[in-house]
Length: 212
Ligand code: OGA
Ligand code: MN
Image (cartoon, rainbow, N blue to C red; front, side, top):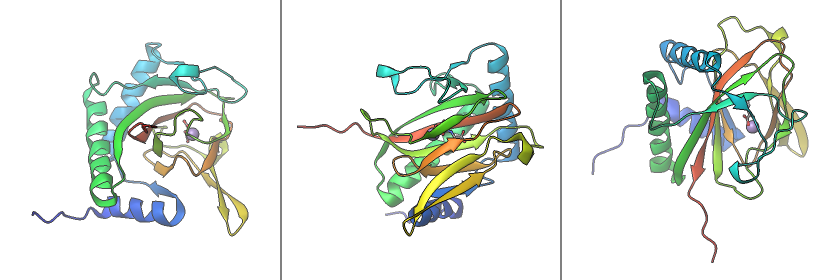
């Protein structure tokens, strides 16, 4: 059998996930890939392709602005441009690596662009649904302009219990930064933004459970 080469970047993400349930990576995508994704997000937003985000999954979704105010565009892996294809190629490579080295059983993936207009936020939540727990790993990559400032707000706050005490981790959405975390374990929120905040966000999902 052919020996499998270790990928140091993926290994770092896996170690982080095992040790702290999240990982922050600055160079998962190269600068040109991030800029190309940013351009294609902005083009679709200009063309009015985005819709108001909702809570819940497709079967029972409702729009509640008091919980979540972003606009999203679901990507179709079968019908996407070169930047999005490059994105999915890397994500798929990472997913295959997880399955090969950690037996994660990731069968599926879903991603959307998100735009948070000024004044919007996403209250504290967990990414898995009550009627569907297939989301295993959450992935967010920020597509903001290159000089994102702390005073623009929009931190991703991750809540983590360490030794019985809750800790808050604030992560600024700087261009190209990627955050990966355990969808079923970590509650998190997006703090109110003062400047338009852009990202590509999605989930690595397991196969549906079959109940007998
Ligand atoms: C989400 C989410 C975090 C972020 O879309 O479920 O929590 O930083 N996004 O955009
Ligand atoms: Mn979330």
